[in-house]
Image 1 (spheres, one colour):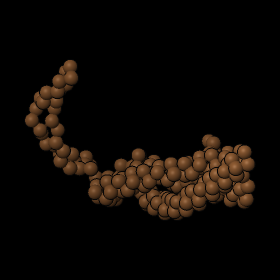
Image 2 (tube, rainbow, N blue to C red):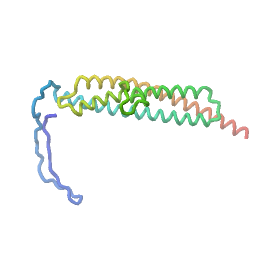
Image 3 (tube, one colour):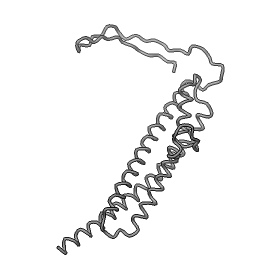
Image 4 (cartoon, rainbow, N blue to C red):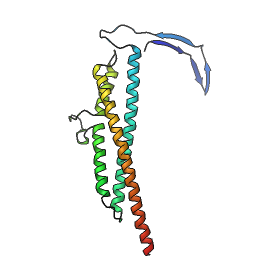
Length: 193
């Protein structure tokens, strides 16, 4: 974005840093007006920051989802090895896993269709890719398509994040239930011995 910058030159030799000049200010200016109407440089920069924030949030949501899916797999293993009467815990865990996989599909697309050339429904990841491509190759700022895709991706992230948090609570509750049932089984075996 056009504005005033400052630069100072230094050299570093054998771990010793020496200042070579006093600070110098310089102006970065727009070379020419584009043929298409554009937002102000401040508005363009604001959109970039919003895209960066949504990208960071998307990464955090992805990590939370991956952690939840990993926990489900660990609990499935524990259930398979448990001799305790777990009631319908395995069915509830299966249903929760399916909900998490649905959220994964909303975030990243259908796992079976992730190969090259496969058509997939729009998802958060594909929408963010569109915005990234526009920002990468546009010289005049975000297009209407980029703005719309970012807004939709943000709404989808809100929904996905809310559902992940709800499912994490259910998963934690199931984990405590499995621990209680396993503890009871182990203590009853101790009493018999």
